[in-house]
Length: 325
Image (cartoon, rainbow, N blue to C red; front, side, top):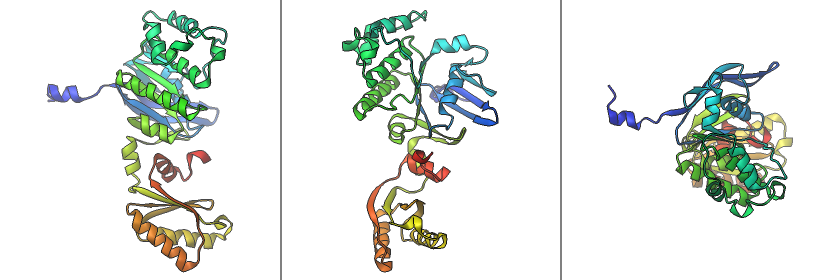
C-alpha cells in the first residue's frame, strides 16, 4: 500500500500523450510520440524547425486532429471532450493574428467575452506590462508588446495549462528576457506551461523538463541538467583547423582520431573545419591539445572553452547542430 504522505508527494499528470501520430501524405510529421506533463511544471518542446513541435502542440490543444494515438488535458480527451479541453487551456500561437484597429483593452475584453469565467482585465494587463498601452491600438505595438498581448489573451480565461509556441522568436534580447520573467511568474502561480522553442538557452533557463524532438520523434526527455550530464563531459574546447574541410578523407580522419585520443578528451566532434573536444579535465585536455599542435606543426584558430550545453546533447544524438537543421 502507498501511504498518504507518499501519495501526496506524487504529482498528478495534467497532460498525457500516448502514441500521437500525424501524417501529411507519406511524411510523418509526428511519429508515435508519448510523454506526460506534471501539474505546475514548465515543459519544453525543443528542436529545430520541422521537428514536429508545433504539430504536437496543436494536437494536444485540439486544433489539429491526430491520425493516431490520443492526448488528454486535465483528464479530458482532445477528441471526445474538446469543449472541456478549451475551458482549461490558454493558447499563444506561433503567429497570432490580432485586430490592428482595436485597442489593447478592447481586444482583451473581446476575448474575455468568449468565456464564462475570466480574470479581471486590468490586473492581467498589468502583469503583462501593458497598462501604459491599454488604450493604444494593436498596430502601434512593438513586437515584444504584441507577444505579451498574445500571452495575455491566452490567460484571460484563467487556464490550468498555457501553451506558448515559440513566444520569443524574432524578439530582441531585452524583450526575450521580459517574456522569460513572465513565464517564470506563471510557474510561480501554479500554471502548467508547455513551451516550444529552438533556443537552447531559453529551454535551459525556463524548463523543468525538456522533450528533445527531431524529425517527428522524441530523442530525449529529461531535466536540462540530466540531459547535459548524459554527455559525461563537463566542458568543451572549441577551435578551428583552417583548411581541414579541404583535406582528403583519410588525412582528415587521422587528425580527428588524434584529437579524440588526447589526454583528458572523451570525444572529438567536427563540423566543417570546426572541432569540439569534450572533457571532464579541461586543463589536461587543453595542455595536451596545444602540445600536440606544436609537435605536429598544426595551426589552429578561434580557441575557446565553455561548459557543455543542450546544443551539445542535440549534436551528440543527431550528428548535427540545431542551426544546421
